[in-house]
Amino acid sequence: MTKQRRKFDASFKLEVARMVREQGLSVTEVCHTMGIGETALRRWLTQYDLELVGDRGPGKPLTPEQLRIRQLEEENRRLKEDNLILKKAFGLLRPGTEVIYHVVTALQKEAISISRACRVLGVSRAGYYAHRQRPSRDTARTRHEVHVRAAFEGSGRSYGSRRVAQAVSAQGVKIGRYRARTLMRQAGLRPVWKRKFVATTNSRHDRPVAPNVLNREFRPAKPDRAWVSDMTYIRTAEGWLYLAVVLDLYSRKVVGWAMASAMPASLIVSALEMAIQQRNPAPGLIVHSDRGSQYASEEHRSLLARHKLVCSMSRLGNCWDNAVMERFFLNLKMERVWQKRYVDRAEARRDITQYIVGFYNPVRLHSTLGYESPQKYEDKQKAKLEQQTT
Image (cartoon, rainbow, N blue to C red):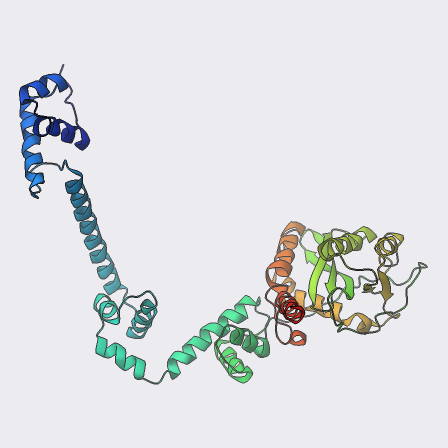
């Protein structure tokens, strides 16, 4: 049976070599004590002696300095190979020179010199400087096209040219409404708008009806002074999903919502409870709705009474008394629901929640708010108030 050959790592070899060179032990003594062959030890000693005078030696490195040098050499070799691979791939898939010039400009922000960037990317410095001095009309057009498309797609393909222009300008790229409209037409970007209605309000009931306290005062001076509330339906392959929403008129922010496969009073109560928990409104807040039986229910009226909130209802057959809420539902359906085919209620729930939390409250621009999103409007007004009080 062949005896298995022993293997020794660099730290062991270094320690053994030092026993001879630094501690003065003989080769024979060390070989006997450590159980190693004399030939191997003398080979390690030769390597050790060469490394001490800065030579790499014929064998594997022993000293920390030589180990580090070998690691750096190996790393340098790999980087050269990687660079070769990238250069070959870059040659095969080489982008246009204009794109490369933009990359050179971007690399300057990473403290990489123009000279080095041009050399690595294979373009001349003279060409780059000439590009910088050329009129930037085409560059600006391309930049505008990219931002216009991004704003349009980000809105769920719902923004018209006015909101697209505002969204792009908010990103620091100045563009007018008519310029945005031209670019949208050229790119074939048209908002997806269609409209359908199903009645969700049942005003034929004998429950108590509140007066129209709100009286179309849709611009309160402070948050949580007036909320509006309503219900709508969402079509899915599994059946209808009903959505109840509470919206703060001050910022147009959705502050509460609930969804269910039916539309009992508990649905609108759940939405209102969420709003109360999130906002903790002071007594006297007006909560406006239509005259539907759910809003006239004992459950809803009791919840309002417990928190000392004021109930307000639209006049009979007058949808304009709750126009802001109607507009929210229209936006929701144009911008999201009518563009989808929900396979079940669970999918619709997820998508509508994402619309409210991920788009409508933090992102969607409102002309009423000076083309700001509800969340941004609230944050800015709060910051102004804090500045005034300090």
